[in-house]
Structure formats: structure tokens, C-alpha cells
Image (cartoon, rainbow, N blue to C red; front, side, top):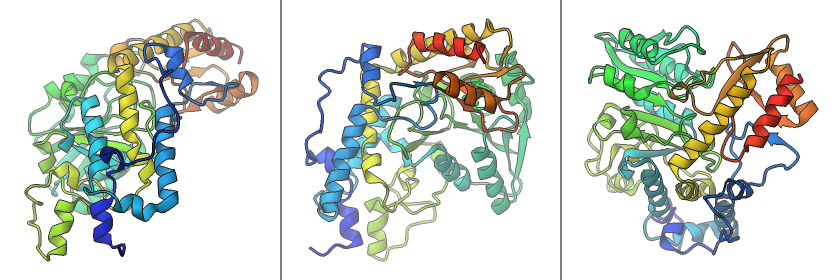
Length: 428
């Protein structure tokens, strides 16, 4: 059969859901999700290194590696027929949405699939309905992706973007200070408040639920959730926000180049798509010469319409389902408890090092997995280089104008590694 765009759209992405993919390459029968050593054994980490930067761009656990390889081999063998074979164009993506929805306890039709946090934020803020009388408030603590996406939206709409500071000092920040600052920042023209759940600049975790409760209902609460997603057991519904964007290739250990954008069903009406979707409900009317109404297609959920069309790295996108299933087997609550325990141990150890100034709060209420600090007399870049050169410890530097050393103990790390890192920092 001649390959056409229509045929590709009708056939793409249903492999795993239809049960037609080749068998898995390796068995995970030895995997015990109750054992942290067994969890670590699912990763092909360099045994010579102590890696405290796996959150930056995730290594893939065995089930994800196998799924990626399975799809990649089939695509390499005969991409046309691997795509054509399916009856439903969206089956594999629906499987990913279903797995993500179970993990997040949300509706599958509330989720758009993206390639990264930055793409999710770009789609969200780039499509936010604004006019020149509106403003969006964000913070000085947010990352470039939020600031730039909002700046570009302001250029196109004439809306104002205002940045506020939520806390004066990361180490001594309090819930009251943060919530009060957020509440004061919102005015009569404010359409949305754009914040980050866990600041990659300091490790401060915002009390999103408390902020949500303090805002007027007319203000959309939009959250960059990447450094809380995959750590915290809290679901979007429990957070109380309107939108949550996150890459899945950090703390979740999902396939590289994958992400999600979640929004409340009602909140999605405040955003219009930017990139055409390839969902059949949007594509078929075009084939038939029927123009959709300005507000979108009636039976097409807005989140689905927000999922960019075109061809993607399908082997990675389709393997995202295995990443959510892997984390489900471990358990959200257990992963959160493990990450927080390791981070607390690391912070407690660093506070005992005389020349170290911890930046991240001690309390788990205001911190997650990131631990940021300074070493007296040593630049953050030299500290990171020194940790590797002397001890083969992988650390990172915060990508902000004020840089700090940044460590991120994840579920692949151990308490012994935490203690080793503390000793290595003390020896700098």
C-alpha cells in the first residue's frame, strides 16, 4: 500500500497497546521494587563514579532501555509497516497518557505530551489568551525558559510581564514569607502567576498548595514542576495548580526527550494550541475540507490538541509508558521518602563542614532533592571539577547568574555515597 500522510496518521503509534511489538529484550523478573539495591541495579551507571547529577539528564532503567530498543529495532527494520500496522493512530500515545494519568491521578485527556519542560512552558505561555490590558506575574527565581516564554508572549500580545521576589534568603525562607509575597504580587490585571515548584537555583520548594489557596480564582497558577516531578508524591490535584509542565527525563528517569503538560479541564480553555496536532479528530476534518471553529474541535480535548504533531523520536515517546510503570512499581510515596531521606542526610553532613554554606533549606516542607551550597574560597566550577578529579564524584553548577554547587541524590544513590560526598567536599 502506498504510504501517505493519512495512512501514517491512521497507523502511527499503536504498537505496544495492540500487543504487536516484538518481545522484550530482557526479563525484569529479578527486579524487586522493594529493594533499593535492586532499583539501582536496573541502571547501567558507571561503577567507578559516584553520580549526584543523574537528575540532570536521566539514565534509563532497564525496562525503559528495553522498550526503546524494541521500538527502535522495529523502526529500523521496517518503519513504514511498523507504523502502518496499527488500526488506531493514537494507541501508543494513549497508552503513554494512560500510564501518566495513573501515576499522576489525573484524567488522560488532561495531558499533553511534549519533549521537555521548556517545550511545555513554551506551548503553555505561547498559547495563553492575553491582551494588552492583562499582565502575567512571575518571579526572579524562575528559570530562563519561563522568563523567555513570557517575554515572547508579551511581544505578541502587548500584555505586561512582572517579576517579583518571593523570599529574601533561600536558607531562611518561610511558608508565610513566600505565600504573602505571592499574594501581594497579584493585582486586578493579573491573569496568571507563573512559578517553579522547586527552584533549580537554590533548591527551595515552593508551598504550591498554600499559594493556590491564597490566589483569587480568576488567576491561573502555572507551575514549572520539573524538579518536583518524580520526587514528590503530591499529585497535581493536591497541589491545587491549574497547569503543571515537566520533563520526564530528570527525576522520573523517563526517556530522554519526553515531557508532559497537565492542565485542569476547565483551565485548558484559557490556552490555544500553537503547533498542529496529528490527532485524527483534527486531521480528518482538514482532509474533508471542513474548517474547525475558532475555539477548536468539539470532541477533541484541548490537551490532546496541544500535543504537537509531526514525527517524533517515537521509540523514546512510546517507551515513556514503561517509565511511569517502573515508578508505579516502586511507589510514589516510597520514592519521595527515599529521596528526602538522602537529601536530609546530605544537608546534615554538609552543615558540619566548616567552610560550607548551605543554601537550600533543611526542612522537607521547603526543599526536595536538590541541595545547593557554597564552599568558602572555592568557586562552584572549581569545586565541581575538584570533586571529579579527586573523588570521581559527579556534581553540577546551578545555571544562574549567581552560581552554586548543586548535588541531587536520587533513588539510585545510597546513604554510603552521601557520606562519601560529604567527606569529599570537606577535603576540597
